Image (tube, rainbow, N blue to C red):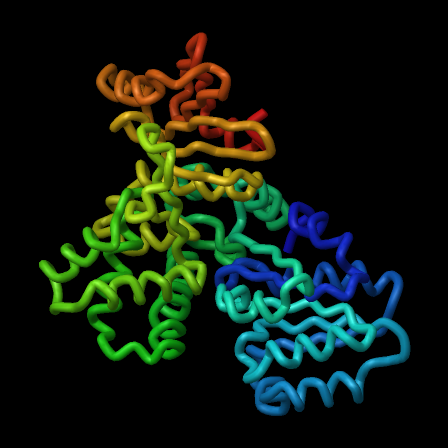
Length: 394
């Protein structure tokens, strides 16, 4: 596994403090490997380290509650500051109480989990001022290039647009084995884990909703529009059930949503939102006859890359014309349109006209897969192949 310096440099300054370091993200995105990299850095100055992975049955059967975890640490820690790593800690009954106790006794505590309930309202209220959190994502393209180079392999931009960035897939030698791995991962993360975790009874309904959402990434929704589609095409259900099922997908980091803003009200339209998949493979695995949705996956990829770069994103309603992203970092704002190609005049006019009426105080950008530079005096065109290698929009 490559060294994920992008995340390490964010976490490094907290190695010795008593804040609980919470590392979250979707299952199999590389959290365990990152935890191992942190351990390797700490081992250069201390051997007082305890690591427990609660996905390991030997661990989960012998340490099954907060008291047994605290007892284990007391028996195995050495004198002085102890560095404790708890992987997939949400599987332990009573883990919040254990964490609150452990941090009090000269311990530096690192925990990972694949469920955003690690940062639930109740937990953050109890730990107010006592934790710092970091969300880890599957590989972006720069990381894929670094990792595949270390494996003496290659990954094209087209491969990335279809199969995304889950790290493990790049270890397999054939596309067939990669797809099998991703299918198994999809089944485990989305179906088995969520259905079992939340004891979902309407399994077919949940699967229908999940498949509909994941193959419809990079689109504007409202809970009501999803409710109407599901009730028209499946068994009847309530709007509350739809909202609940969507929350399960968000809690497991399978989807992310961003709100829509309007130039007219200057306010957030909370009933409209745009959904992006945590990884575009979730869309591609649901395509029939290899008719992959490259257009929407490209926008989803741009979303993932911008989040990695540290931008806060929203959809922007410019007097009825949708701008894919308004990206903000610090005091800088960027308006961004994404299209697969703007070679055709109709598409070119549509994408550029979306910026009409926006002043030139903020940078306006269009990202496409074209090789020709379509930049104008007011709009910068960035080729996708260049954008994927950028660290920021500056």
